[in-house]
Image 1 (cartoon, rainbow, N blue to C red):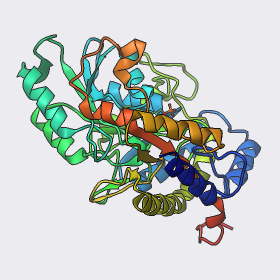
Image 2 (tube, rainbow, N blue to C red):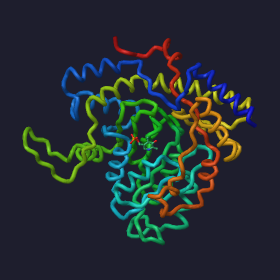
Image 3 (cartoon, protein in one colour):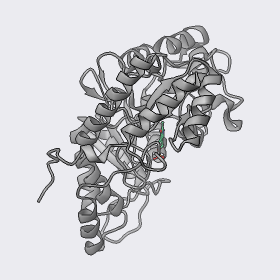
Image 4 (cartoon, rainbow, N blue to C red):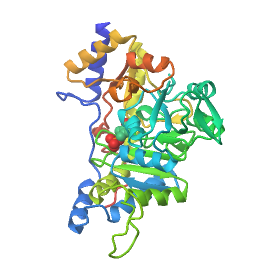
Length: 394
Ligand SMILES: *Cc1c(COP(=O)(O)O)cnc(C)c1O
């Protein structure tokens, strides 16, 4: 068993060259980053308005195919804003998956709503449409035109599926269940920029989607986020609420409600624009790395978490599945001891102190994955980018 782990660690060392320590996901700046940053500093417009913010939003519309994109300070604030826009109010319940990064549940808590955690699908790692449907059928009813939890009497105000490690969740089935139950879908697409399900970009199936540009994501601008929607009224309101609810005027400070300072600084947007130019090349590069993991794993008899059928994943983070928790721990210990960063899945959100009282279903698959999943180094391999046509401006 330990031989198997050691050879896997050696394989990863080969993949990422001989460096001392191999991170899980390092940012990669080989495009127009410096140029745009200098341009931004020279313009003095480094703060929350400026041409790069607009350019970033138009690029996000083009990339995702969403009609509207609105910049935000980070993925968490984008998700919080999306929940507000979907109509989540204090005292509501929001159904999400137990296997996710803490930000998903935090954004729900910011709105003083109660997260409810349902199980995930073993094929995608994301929310299971059948677990969602079973939860709604067994524990909810339609009353006064909306879905409510029969036991708590609280309204189910939104469903938030997350595209785990960039692998598209079973989004069409989830949206159709939610249509039947009249619940808006807000996609946590923080990890899935560049990932498509049946040719359509993740984040654009529900009412709203939220993306992150944090330092560890596929592309980064230090910190940044984006809300996407096809609804022009929601987009307009997203822009208004994220920019302190200021009524446009040349000098008056008129704010017509409590707004948020969720404005992405122009200097971050400058970095984001340069990174978005690289997105296609990065995703292609990461997919090549993923196929090398896939081939190695199938030869070595290690389970690899592959992209779901009919999907094109960005393979933000590659993951393997150990035989059991014991073997998982050995992967983590031996890998990290040899400078090859490996990381377990997040602890299930219902096991964190802030969310321990939240309602859940049996979470069988979530627990199964939590016991076995190991993320492995997945950065862009820069040396393979060099000869690629990057479409960069002169
Ligand atoms: C990264 C991430 C976020 C939050 O993004 P930030 O930009 O770090 O605020 C939200 N949800 C998921 C699933 C993430 O992975």
